[in-house]
Amino acid sequence: MNSEGSLPEGVAECFAIYGELESSCLFGSGHINTTFVSRWNQAGARVRYLHQLINDRVFLEPGEVMENIDRVTRHIASVLRGEGEADISRRTLTVVPSRDGRLFVRDGGGGWWRTYLFVERAHALDVVSSPSEAFFLGKAVGRFQRQLARLEGKRLNETIPGFHNMESRYRAFRGAVERDPLNRAGTAGAEIDFMLENEERGAVLTRALTEGRVPERVCHNDAKINNILIDDGDNRALCVVDLDTVMPGTCLFDVGDLIRTVAARAKEDERDLSQVEFDFPFFTSLVEGYLSEASSFLTTGEKELLAESGRNITHIMALRFLTDYLNGDTYYRTSRPGHNLDRARNQIALVRSMDRNREKITRFLLEAV
Ligand code: GN1
Ligand code: MG
Image 1 (spheres, rainbow, N blue to C red):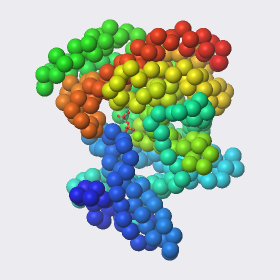
Image 2: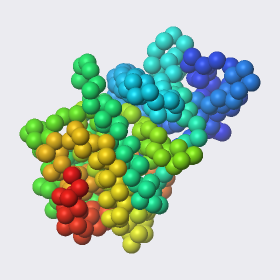
Image 3: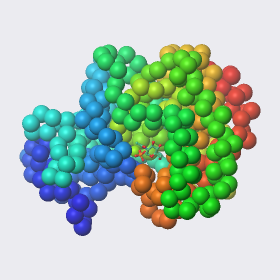
């Protein structure tokens, strides 16, 4: 990346894009990949594209990531066509291949690049401000799962093996506490204790999946609020993006991540923990939106675990942020000292707030499903 944060020379031109490249700049707030937007003149029309440098320390097989994304986005587009939908290229991502027909381009340093059509007139949110926004976010994730419920062909590649496996996440956590390479464990005593006390309950989704009490499905695995694009016009969710982790899992991971990020009044790195509260009205609207698409395919086993899903994904995020803090911030992008510890504290506060609402959550779900 050069000093202005524009695309490295020559990368964008390797993709099958017509016209003249006018400018490019950094874009977005992801923790993992590096994203740019480019602006082109195509016969007098201004057109934008999105380019991403895939983090190949996190995704060890970027080619397999792209194979999944290509299959999934083509499938969603064909489902949308079947439903007579217009505006398909705003309702799913579209991969732009390289000039030699590949799904990615390698740069001189070995980096893996991909390109998508830029979805215009859309935005993402970090927090919701109304129950109606929560409803449409829930609906978008339910719709995504429904669209992929009948993806034919071989099982999708596991782009990060054991991604939401609580048991392996706890092994990594214990290793980090033992090694404590930067002597940080002393500054996170209360958080480490929280993890040790909550280990058993945290295994609930992992065990349900490995024991077959919930089915394996194609799911997103990172269905948090800011991975959903919303139409600037009518404020309804358009599509789910950030598809690197689309792979086999349980759909409870997705609804759980949505509960974590939609039914929370603060961003995941808010330091003022008095603001980190579970929001019951946002939660109920989001579940209603989700079930408006998903209730037709969810099994009884899945419905029974809905109540635990939000807490479970919030817990695993707290565990991963804390592990990364102890390891010296080697995984997530951070923008201040202690950022990962702040995130872990925030997510633990959210788990606690969910626990204070446990009875209400359970009662609501008994009625709703
Ligand atoms: C990462 O890249 P981004 O910000 O969408 C992470 C997710 C976490 C999330 C926390 C591949 O997602 O698992 O939920 O941060 N993605 C990966 O906000 O680890
Ligand atoms: Mg993202």
